[in-house]
Length: 182
Picture 1 (cartoon, rainbow, N blue to C red):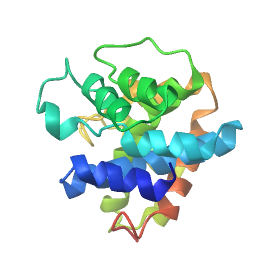
Picture 2 (cartoon, helix red, strand yellow; picture 1 turned 45 degrees about the horizontal axis):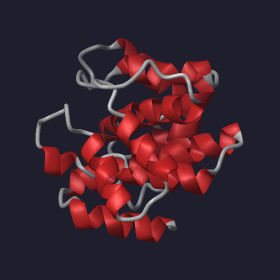
Picture 3 (cartoon, rainbow, N blue to C red; picture 1 turned 135 degrees about the vertical axis):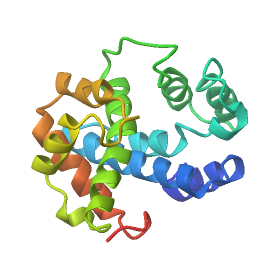
């Protein structure tokens, strides 16, 4: 399955534009991380696209999140590697994480929205966001208060956090038009 097919599959289950954008942003960061860490960038991007495929189905029931997504993806014929990654990404049910894919998805899931929030403060210009911006805003607990900062920090087991922030910024900047950013 390529990126276009993953997006089409996501579109069959997700109607929310903001959730779709979140999945695209998370996928961009996953791709950037995979390239940096020498992993399969296409696979990691697809996982990022599909990680919240069940979010509208489960409503607020976090005891089903990921599990329903994996079930849906199995029915759609996706590989067990993709299905298990989607299932395990629900940090309220799984963890602690030690595998690179799991750590990356935890961090990408959280940093994607954070980088976008930083860009919106700068008039939507993601290219004006720097690792320094992210470090400063992470210290401000009132900024993007719902962001799980500890999930962002989890990637520290794989790479330097400042390098991660730059990977995330660059990855989202590469998809800025698709995400409605400058």
